[in-house]
Length: 220
Image (tube, rainbow, N blue to C red; front, side, top):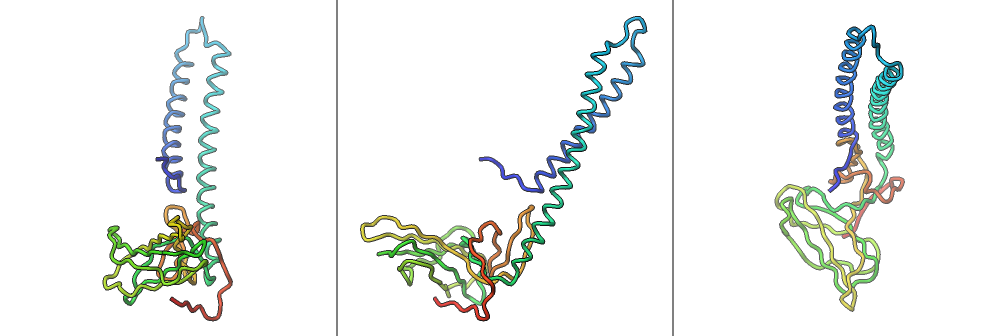
């Protein structure tokens, strides 16, 4: 599996690389100075070799400057991402996200069906991945539907899953959504996360944004 590179991990790698380059740079200068000091006057360092060594030294110095520039760019990117995401506060969002917290014994999701389904089964899993409830979806027609579960006797994060089939038993396109008003923005590991209802989800999962409506009621 390829490790995802975030701004934090990238900065860490740049810092490590800069430390190594700086150490090599100092070592190179020391060796070059010692070489010039102790060279045989009757057989001095070849000018071409000396020029090549100076070119290498300049390359190391340029890499150090490049690393500092990359760090500055990553830092600015993080601040810019937070400022940009903050513009979404107050808007109504729809995200492909299935995890939410139970509040007052309830948890609310939405689900979308790509076509009319003959069967549509919902499952709710707790944070340990165990199924704590399952049953038929209340609406099996094409489109987006809301679903509220009132069996959350224990606080925590729960995840909704859906499986839908047509009359021939063929699987239908279906996905779980989180919908609601964006009330906050946070940065985690260089990525912007939004607070939508009782969910905290990555900005990258948002598929729709709308101007906030005066009333944001949902049916289940």
